[in-house]
Length: 131
Image (cartoon, rainbow, N blue to C red):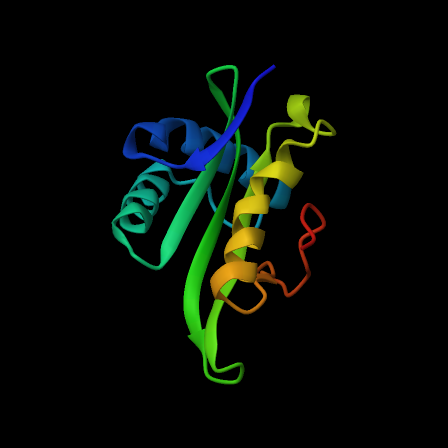
Protein backbone atom coordinates (compact mmCIF):
# COMPACT_ATOMS: atom_id res chain seq x y z
CA UNK A 1 0.00 0.00 0.00
CA UNK A 2 1.37 3.38 -1.04
CA UNK A 3 -0.26 6.40 0.60
CA UNK A 4 0.27 9.81 -1.00
CA UNK A 5 -1.05 13.03 0.58
CA UNK A 6 -1.19 15.85 -1.93
CA UNK A 7 -2.92 19.07 -2.85
CA UNK A 8 -6.23 18.35 -4.55
CA UNK A 9 -6.67 19.07 -8.24
CA UNK A 10 -9.79 19.71 -10.33
CA UNK A 11 -9.59 16.17 -11.66
CA UNK A 12 -10.14 14.97 -8.07
CA UNK A 13 -13.51 16.68 -7.64
CA UNK A 14 -15.65 13.62 -8.45
CA UNK A 15 -13.78 11.58 -5.83
CA UNK A 16 -14.03 14.45 -3.35
CA UNK A 17 -17.79 14.64 -3.92
CA UNK A 18 -18.00 10.92 -3.13
CA UNK A 19 -16.13 11.58 0.13
CA UNK A 20 -18.40 14.53 0.91
CA UNK A 21 -21.44 12.33 0.26
CA UNK A 22 -20.07 9.85 2.78
CA UNK A 23 -19.34 12.61 5.33
CA UNK A 24 -22.82 14.11 4.94
CA UNK A 25 -24.37 10.68 5.44
CA UNK A 26 -22.61 10.53 8.83
CA UNK A 27 -23.46 14.04 9.98
CA UNK A 28 -26.88 14.74 8.48
CA UNK A 29 -26.53 18.53 8.99
CA UNK A 30 -26.79 19.54 5.34
CA UNK A 31 -28.62 18.26 2.28
CA UNK A 32 -26.51 16.30 -0.17
CA UNK A 33 -26.55 18.54 -3.27
CA UNK A 34 -23.96 17.57 -5.88
CA UNK A 35 -24.22 20.90 -7.73
CA UNK A 36 -23.39 22.83 -4.55
CA UNK A 37 -20.48 20.53 -3.78
CA UNK A 38 -19.11 20.86 -7.32
CA UNK A 39 -19.34 24.65 -7.20
CA UNK A 40 -17.86 24.78 -3.69
CA UNK A 41 -14.87 22.61 -4.60
CA UNK A 42 -14.24 24.68 -7.74
CA UNK A 43 -14.40 27.93 -5.74
CA UNK A 44 -12.04 26.48 -3.13
CA UNK A 45 -9.52 25.50 -5.77
CA UNK A 46 -9.61 29.02 -7.21
CA UNK A 47 -9.05 30.58 -3.78
CA UNK A 48 -5.71 31.51 -2.27
CA UNK A 49 -7.20 31.02 1.19
CA UNK A 50 -8.58 27.51 0.92
CA UNK A 51 -6.65 24.33 0.24
CA UNK A 52 -7.97 20.79 -0.05
CA UNK A 53 -5.65 17.88 0.52
CA UNK A 54 -6.43 14.36 -0.64
CA UNK A 55 -5.16 11.02 0.56
CA UNK A 56 -4.49 8.73 -2.36
CA UNK A 57 -3.92 5.06 -1.66
CA UNK A 58 -2.78 2.86 -4.51
CA UNK A 59 -4.26 5.33 -7.03
CA UNK A 60 -7.64 5.78 -5.30
CA UNK A 61 -8.63 8.86 -3.30
CA UNK A 62 -9.75 7.53 0.08
CA UNK A 63 -9.66 10.64 2.27
CA UNK A 64 -9.41 14.41 2.33
CA UNK A 65 -9.30 17.50 4.51
CA UNK A 66 -9.63 21.21 3.95
CA UNK A 67 -7.71 24.14 5.40
CA UNK A 68 -9.25 27.63 5.30
CA UNK A 69 -6.82 30.47 6.01
CA UNK A 70 -7.98 33.71 7.62
CA UNK A 71 -6.60 36.58 9.64
CA UNK A 72 -7.17 36.42 13.36
CA UNK A 73 -7.11 39.92 14.82
CA UNK A 74 -7.09 38.45 18.32
CA UNK A 75 -3.98 36.39 17.60
CA UNK A 76 -2.42 38.97 15.30
CA UNK A 77 -1.67 36.61 12.46
CA UNK A 78 -2.97 33.98 10.13
CA UNK A 79 -5.07 31.18 11.51
CA UNK A 80 -6.62 28.18 9.85
CA UNK A 81 -9.80 26.23 10.20
CA UNK A 82 -9.59 22.55 9.32
CA UNK A 83 -12.81 20.96 8.12
CA UNK A 84 -14.18 18.28 5.83
CA UNK A 85 -11.85 15.70 7.33
CA UNK A 86 -13.08 12.36 6.09
CA UNK A 87 -11.73 8.90 5.27
CA UNK A 88 -13.85 6.14 3.78
CA UNK A 89 -14.73 3.66 6.54
CA UNK A 90 -12.94 0.73 4.94
CA UNK A 91 -9.67 2.67 5.30
CA UNK A 92 -10.30 3.78 8.88
CA UNK A 93 -7.84 2.83 11.57
CA UNK A 94 -4.92 2.68 9.13
CA UNK A 95 -3.47 6.12 9.82
CA UNK A 96 -4.88 7.75 6.66
CA UNK A 97 -6.70 10.53 8.54
CA UNK A 98 -3.73 11.20 10.79
CA UNK A 99 -1.40 11.54 7.81
CA UNK A 100 -3.92 13.67 5.90
CA UNK A 101 -4.05 16.34 8.61
CA UNK A 102 -0.25 16.43 8.96
CA UNK A 103 0.05 19.01 6.15
CA UNK A 104 -2.23 21.55 7.88
CA UNK A 105 -0.32 20.90 11.11
CA UNK A 106 2.99 21.57 9.38
CA UNK A 107 1.60 24.78 7.85
CA UNK A 108 0.49 25.86 11.31
CA UNK A 109 3.95 25.40 12.74
CA UNK A 110 5.59 27.14 9.81
CA UNK A 111 3.33 30.11 9.13
CA UNK A 112 0.22 30.34 11.25
CA UNK A 113 -1.35 30.15 14.65
CA UNK A 114 -3.18 26.94 15.55
CA UNK A 115 -5.92 25.69 13.26
CA UNK A 116 -9.29 25.08 14.85
CA UNK A 117 -11.81 22.32 14.57
CA UNK A 118 -15.15 23.50 13.19
CA UNK A 119 -18.53 22.86 14.68
CA UNK A 120 -21.67 21.47 13.08
CA UNK A 121 -24.82 23.47 12.55
CA UNK A 122 -26.18 22.51 15.95
CA UNK A 123 -23.04 23.64 17.78
CA UNK A 124 -21.73 20.18 18.58
CA UNK A 125 -18.08 19.47 17.94
CA UNK A 126 -17.57 16.83 15.30
CA UNK A 127 -17.12 13.40 16.81
CA UNK A 128 -15.24 12.31 13.71
CA UNK A 129 -12.28 14.68 14.03
CA UNK A 130 -10.24 16.21 16.80
CA UNK A 131 -7.17 18.43 16.22
